[in-house]
Length: 170
Image (cartoon, rainbow, N blue to C red):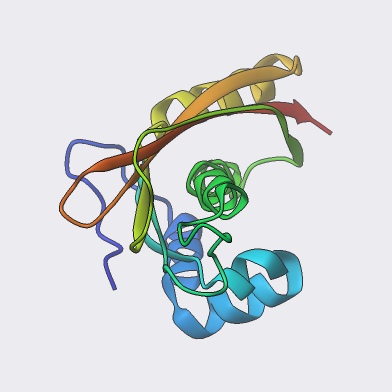
């Protein structure tokens, strides 16, 4: 389990560390995904790394994620990319006053046929934390565009995603 915090980033609170541990635990993640995100659970998507600024999500390649052209279905890629950004938002909302989060826009580009396991990497944690802090400070809604990239084994970029999250204090 890789739950280490990047030394150059802000340290996680105890509550955030517990959240990371739950999201990285195979058993806890399985129950959570079945109950709250059943499609991701069916596809076998897993959070591998969750730190202050970074989230990495793995998606296996197989019959559950395949389209008729023997590559990874775009909707499966979108789901994994959204999770890589949304997990960071959940991490930064932990222990904060109730705040709604909603995807308001989703853009993507596909570069390479995905015929193997993909790893989605989002490094937008600082921007997400800033948007959440702003909405909590003044009560005004904020939007942030989180960027996620899908890589094939060996580091080849297969796809990119821009997920616009809206935060509003309840």
